[in-house]
Length: 489
Ligand code: NAI
Ligand code: MG
Image (cartoon, rainbow, N blue to C red):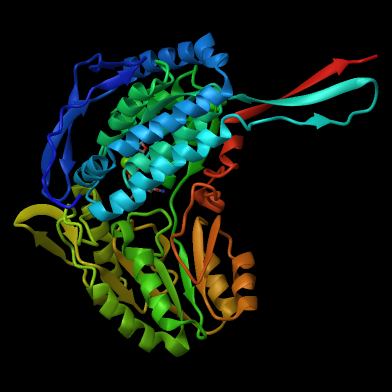
């Protein structure tokens, strides 16, 4: 991690039933390094017949005694072993994630890879603690519940936290005794393949985890439509989440969705301004703004607006786009040419709608390469009806709005179809909790931003999705409850 040396990256195959295989069609696609716009390697492009093979392998593994009858403690041990294998290669995995996704290597190592390892260890601990209840019922009966696995779970994940999103789904799923077919995003397929390698080395039975690199169509869609998949866990855009929910209706799969956000970050006039400035810039520039919880709407009390914005511009200018493999870099490129175009489109729209461009808005070149770098961008005088205040941009673009009292801030904050996260900065404990209770979002931060932990639930209100990942809440996503009656009469 201390050097910027690149890695020798081998072409990737599909991982099905414990074996590395080409796609049936033989097709492959390139995965691009967003810092250079050059291909890193190519991986197999899965299609419907590959999905079918992977689902069959997952079903066979699910029904096998080697998984069904495995002592839950041994399941836990397998998860600990996967965590150990990831940890042995943590520095290398961080570099790989950085090269595939563009995120600063320091963040990849300290957040993505570390949190992925933590996630496997956390759910390893749960494996032998998943229990039902004994329910008091009338009559001479014993009634008890069992928490049984759902079956074959399809996991479809995005490119912004590739290994971490895989861990959030795979770890609880297998801890609960399910088997998984994982489809990583086409932009960032490489660390999911390393997860498959780690699982194989850890001794996870063949077919318990299968990994299919490929595109949303056909690979993701075939997984959603497959009649023998019991559940789909999806993280990604709200648009695709809606498609998945509709398509899953045909086979009545269980679905959990973690979708987009347009999170309000509210600064009251009694806040610690310096701390809030620091928090507000991290809230939007962390991961180049490509975070579903990004604090993309900054709502500042009108009394402190000028001082706050002046300090914010200064702080934001410190996020200088740079080579993500350099441990000092804090702002990497956007993930793809497509994402850069989308974000540039929003910047143009912000200007044409009459928002004032206070900072950035332009591309930059790093190391003389055609990477997808964009300067930190801040718009002032943004109004709630402007597109840049309503739609998820998923880039380093902040919209600043003002308000005159707490109720107005809450009203503006809630004026969105999303509900993933929100934050409030104040020294008044009553106002802080009032806001936390009134804001319609799955996570609310008080005098902080972007905190996450494997033990704490994560998910959305409104069109940010449903179902809670992480913590003990994820056990509800990956188990189903059976009620058993025994006649004692
Ligand atoms: P996307 O939602 O298309 O991709 C996410 C995953 O879904 C990928 O694995 C993709 O292959 C898969 N997918 C796409 N179409 C599918 C289909 N019809 N059936 C099954 N799977 C399908 O996201 P995309 O296009 O990469 O990004 C577009 C926007 O989505 C971003 O600008 C951002 O606003 C939002 N987004 C939000 C994320 C979040 O964490 N909530 C993550 C990624 C993107
Ligand atoms: Mg897409």
